[in-house]
Length: 500
Image 1 (cartoon, rainbow, N blue to C red):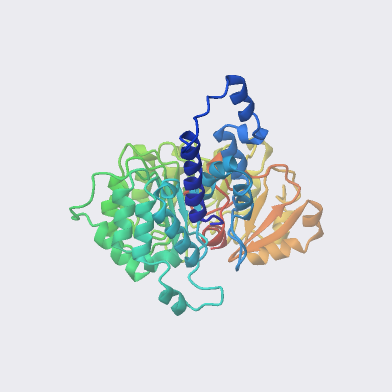
Image 2 (image 1 turned 135 degrees about the horizontal axis):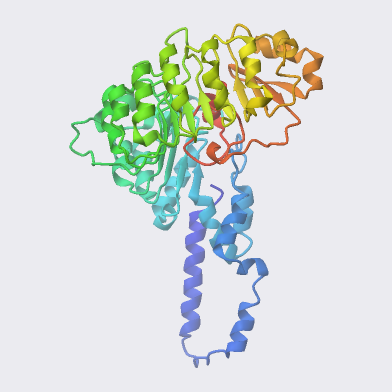
């Protein structure tokens, strides 16, 4: 963490000892108090930066927090560690900044952190986020077996850390942590942390993780409270969780605002059981094979919890399961909430007949995914007709047979040569490579980018930096994972959101 709790304890004890000694010195006459002018002069000897309000320190020091952990044996929080050593005032002020967002790239880092917050409970009370999104159980020249033998991060130690971090707001986990998430961890998270706002278990599917969730989140578990305080929940790609988990969990989330159930076994009835008091703004039901299109449309149009949706992801692999039929699309598109800014309909049964329903949306949507639909090139060109005043910044046309490098450049009202608001165009890898070879693409300022299985054409000279409030601090377009915390996405979250 870049901080030693022993030093903190020793300096605090030394300061208190000096204060007591000066208050009642043995064998001497007590000194009279200094006059007000002298006391004021003594206070003014502090540097100007040491007299700033605490809120200003929090703003300044937030820029020193690393977004990603350094690799290997490099020192972490080196900038904040330097601030700690500068003065007693800045030491105390920067302490909260270091401990409020604790990031764990390796198990030894967590072990040191646990020792500090266990031995000094005041430090545990400062922790607001435990971030394992960058965590890996191997590396630094060690094998997986060696890490298991070290016992730095286990179900027991993880439970102890949650008990010590009693003011925790966000718990960000992922698949590498799955084998260490046992029943005691889940009980501590959901039952004993009244301030917890966000929990992310992205990609976790280990057998122990599944068994723990099945045991704790069972409808007949007598320990289950009536409700959980969670506002943001991600079970993205938690493919092994049983349907009983969702039956027990979703009805107990009255404060829900962000929900990601991508590629899970959630059912229609569990969705409808979400409390009416929830105010969901971000929702992903991508690749949920147990859902039916008709019931999902009914949920989206009638459930009071989704009246203010901003982000909706209904991405499906059409070769495996097509959620929305042509009739479902006709029912859904005209009745989508006016607050919506990001819509993913990849894999839906959309044809040219649905174009009149799509065109009114382009004036208020900033992200639109129409991959693997049956639209013609004329339909796509119509989206950028000036009469609609398109506000689209991101468009996904992956898997549409009519879309080719030539059609993008040379069709009537072709997309790429136009000066539009579009910043990112997602295509298949073949089409992106083909477009990148054409000189017209380069002249218009488009460049090729790819990550994982996805490829994009990105406009380099865009004035818009891509930052939006609804993106939760990210500047990237086309993220398919619902964020549970503020900040740029990275690590395994970036792979699941932008690489798959």
